[in-house]
Structures are given as structure tokens and as C-alpha cells.
Length: 138
Length: 324
Image 1 (cartoon, one colour):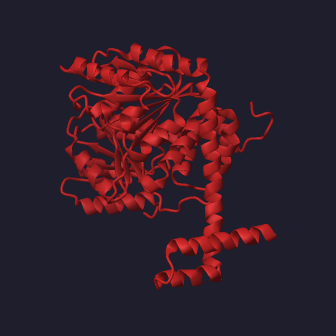
Image 2: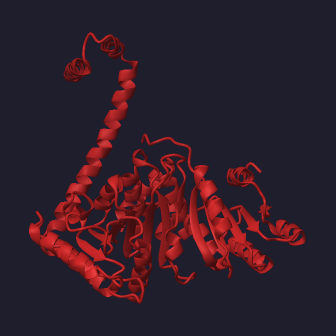
Image 3: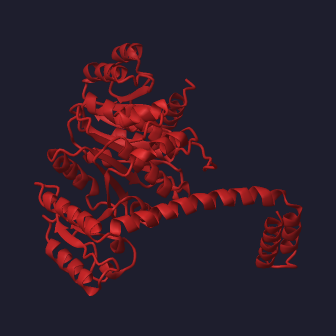
């Protein structure tokens, strides 16, 4: 059957895990990804790892972006990665942004977080990294 | 149910409650991926069981918050619920921010709720067809109730009417005066009106304006749209909202209109599919037809008009068809 042929938009989940009310960064990134033609599922504030993983599965996203400024990343991120594995969804790349010390950053990358953006990262860098992660070219 | 017909493995997975399989095939449907076609077709025999309710209204009237409390109400009654929430795509970048999930609070372990956000992907993106197929997938996956949330505008309204047996139109106090309620479009598709944020002042005026509009004329099908006041704070009015939906569903059954509407919808679908195929076939044939190219040249030169070219091609095609 002839169907519309179009490049398929990248679907990305943007969420803020844990107790952290600072969502400006997440919104700025969501907006930038939207303007880059992506479909951003914005899950917003105070998401538990379980909610994030469930949203990722139901929405069948190509990519998960986590924003955190609370300092709880070493507790929450490994849990999210573990749950993704349990749901057989560990093929979905995870990237993160926020306040994450270098030492933690190295450990999180070892655990499987694919990219971590600190303060001052340009939006174009985030967009191009997100795109190549989603398309599996990184 | 499927009469011993063997289902493709992924269709079987969806029918047996595999949510990841369901999510994957929904993506394939959205993308127009041909791999979705055999799955949707194989599952068709298992559809027609879910009750499909549309929830539509302008941006910011609280549809998502209302959905959240409605889902909780339906879960407390033991129904499983599938949700499709459609948000607009940017006409500029093609991107979108799908923010309906943000209002949805529920038990992460509750497998009897499935929530999917969908971007409209523009008018030409076929949101009506996509929505219909996604609703069918949720139906085949066994959800008792499927809720379709859309922003009330353009083709998406149509999509709701094509898939939902009951349409709820959500408004808020001070959305506009009584003349707004007379305008064509959104208000015409409502089987149930929901004045949301009814904790705000002006809810009674909104209700009165709607009631007057409803009383101004009798609908062709004989149904008088119900008007309910709701608030997601509290919440309040949610059982009343659902009762109004059920009353309309009952009306569809007792008046015999469900069967008639269903037949009309499916007729439109089949005719549409045939039209698509004939259209594609015709396009590819005409592009190779020297007569077409010749007539096109004459149209470009302004020696004949486009209608005349179409007449000649149509007659020539009819003659060819008869001689075969």
C-alpha cells in the first residue's frame, strides 16, 4: 500500500528525576530539540525512575534525556539504567545534563550514560549529540 | 475470536498484553512504516470491543488534568484504559513538545493503563488515519476504554469523529460569550459538554450559555448534548462526566444509531482506501502517458484549459476501459 514517505522524526523523552524543582534547563533543551524537528515527550518534574522507564517504553522513544541539579544523580541514574535493562529497553541511549561533578560523570559514563552536558554547553552541541545518539551514529 | 487464523508473532504479542510490542507497532503506524500494515490487518478481527471516547477542546482548558482524574475514576471501576494524546507539530520545524504526560499521575506498576503521546505531524501527515489505526491497536490489546485527547482544530476534530463513539468537548469559564457557542466547528461535534475548571467564577454562566445553545435547535440524530461541570481540583464532577458519556452510549444502542454510524464510518474508510489506490495507480499511469504529456503542454501554452485536458483524458480512459 502506498503510504506517505517522510523522514521519521526522532522521539525523545525529557524528564527530571527525583526531588528537584529547577526545570528551566530541561525546558530550554526541550525547546531546542523541538526546533530541531524532534518530537519531545516532556515528562517534567519529580519523576521516579519507574515512571521514566515506563514512559520511555510506552512512548517508544529513541532517546532519553535526564536533567538533574539536586545531586542525587548517583542514586537515580544507575536505577534508571537498571530498570531499562529489566524492561529489555537498554538499547535506548540515555544522556544527561545538570550539575554533575567530573568524577561522577566518569562513573556514570562507565555505567552506560552516553553523554553528560554541564553548564555552558551550547544548544547546538546538545542537539547534534542527541541526533547522533538517536540515529545510532555515535 | 480470530477463528484460528494465525497471527504474526508481534500481533500475538500485542493481543496478549506485551506493551513494548504495542508501543513499537504504534511507532511503525505513525511513521507509515509498511511493516505495520500486516499487524494492523491481522488484529482487525479483534477490534470493536473497546469503548472509544474523544476528549477535545482548545489549548489550556485542562484536558490532560481532566484525563488524569478520569483515568483514576475508570480504574476504580475496574476498567483498563488506553490513552492517545495528540498534540500539534510545528509547521516550521516539524518538531513538537508533547506535554500531556506531565499531568498523569498513576501507579507505575499499573499495567492496565497505557498512555501514548502523538504528534499531529501536520495536516498532510494523515493524523486521521494514524489515530484510527492506533486506536485499533489499543482496542486489540484489550483495553476496555480508549480515550483520545486532541486539541480541537481542523483535521484532528475529524479524526475524533471517525474513531470515537462519544465526543466530549471541554471548555472553561470565560472562553467567550454565547455567540461563540453558535459558531460552526468544535461545538457541533459535542455529545457531552464539559465545563472544566468549574471552581473558577463564571462556570454557571458558561453552563447557561451552552444550555441555551443546545436548546436552540434539535440535532439531526435526536440526541441532546449533556452539560457537566468538572474540576480536576478536588476533583469534582468526574462520575457525572462519565455517566453522561454512558448515557450517550446507551442512546446510540437504543436508537439503533450505533450500527448505522459504524456502517457509515467503515464505508468511508473502504471507499477512501480504494480512492487512494485508484489515485496512485492513475498518477503513475498518467505520468507515463504521452497523451497526458501532450495535453499538459497545451495547457501550459494556454491553448486549452485544465478542465478540457481532464475531460479528454477521462473520456479516453473510459473508452479504453470499455474496449477491454
